[in-house]
Image (cartoon, rainbow, N blue to C red; front, side, top):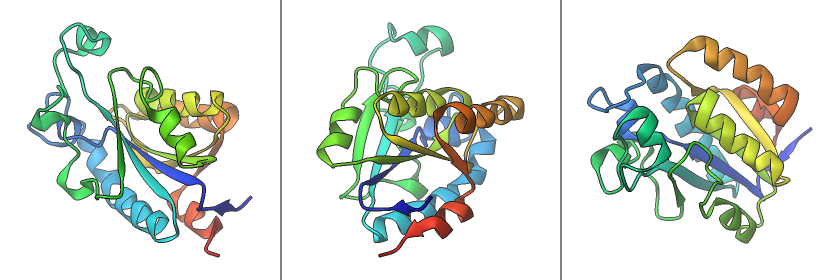
Length: 188
């Protein structure tokens, strides 16, 4: 099944300094491996008319549920909550801030997608087994076609990544590698 890029949004999830910089509080070195693929994908989809939406953790207080679990990190307005330099949002990109694992829960993601007439979402970023998974599930529940790219998402613990990949293809949507998606993209 092909992919018409118009009506498609790339959701880039949590590619933040807090997770991708050695100075970050929850550093995931493995995430650096997916940065070139996401850069390539972002550039290609934008050239073909797709939209780019960053879905970023941005905590506001110590009472946020994730803070209770993982400690203070990615606090709004701090360096840790900023997208890494290599993937810095461009002026025509969108940013949605989240305070939980799910990019849809109490955020503007759904209304943003609908206002842009989005039908398909391509999900990438970190962490495969939590934020990317739960945001993908939220998109599925809201009727979006969900495409996950196994070489554009990762997590620090490989068994979590591997087990969740099976769940994407069996329960949520479609699972491809970047090269497969680029081949099936309708350039017309």
